[in-house]
Amino acid sequence: MERKMEFFQKLGYSREDVVRVLGKLGDGALVNDVLQELIHTGSRPGTQEGLLSSTGPLLVPRGSCGALNSAQRALEEDDGDLASSLRPIVIDGSNVAMSHGNKEAFSCRGIQLAVDWFRDRGHTYIKVFVPSWRKEPTRSDTPIREQHVLEELERQEVLVYTPSRKVNGKRVVCYDDRYIVKVAYEKDGVIVSNDSYRDLQSENPEWGWFIEQRLLMFSFVNDRFMPPDDPLGRRGPTLSNFLSKKPRPPAPSWKHCPYGKKCTYGIKCKFSHPERPSHPQLSVADELRAKTQARPSGAAPPSPREPRAEDLA
Image 1: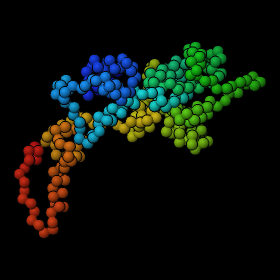
Image 2 (image 1 turned 90 degrees about the vertical axis):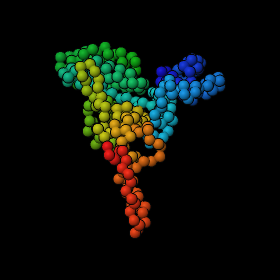
Image 3 (image 1 turned 45 degrees about the vertical axis):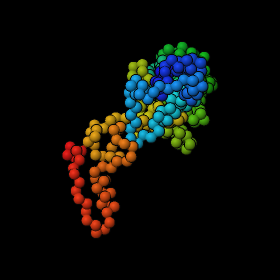
Image 4 (image 1 turned 120 degrees about the vertical axis):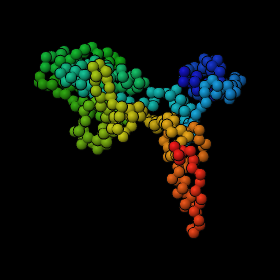
């Protein structure tokens, strides 16, 4: 709500008008609906001078045409159905639990920490797969910690037990990894595991590509579940884009150029220059090159111009 309030105040509407309209439409109303209601109720934005004095001048970096429209679209997307824009999550319960237990015990608390991390981000489709024999009482050779967590997650319809049974006293276990990859592939989701599933990659070429692109590895720092910020490497997408169905482009740099008016990079400068006009600017070298190419053959070279302040800096 604060983001909406700030957005409409920058448009010049008073805080009282915005609070009144949001109270009528609800905090989840889209920006266009709120704006339309403000217009219908006769609210008028403040003067431009008042807007500049209250919020400061709105600086738009060079090359960022339509920045306000982009910000408005981003705000509308945030206020829309967040769950529909996030990918389904399929968790390899055994891998997560053993990782949290330092490969010495099956720590069910690790599964709960992973589920809570994705819930806090807004994911609604979360499935955890665990072999059904993990419901059996703990033994010295297969210790299980905090087994009640599995029961609670099963009641919440988050945890799914893969089949297993005993035949002539011998346990027959279905391959739970195949369940994990199959469900994640069908749901177009993300697999949470430190297992690379090499056997399944070679089994199905489509699964091979999917596992390479949708496998989210992780670490536990004490009781903190920590996936990497760059799941596919330094040149890959960010974690937010990796977990989203609608990746967002990187935000433009709003940092002002440290050289200010003395900068001679022109349009090649990657920093913001709010003091410059919107028309393209060339660096000194590009300006001289353009004049040389435009001069007719055999014409005398132009007389040298007076040096500019940025040239002497």
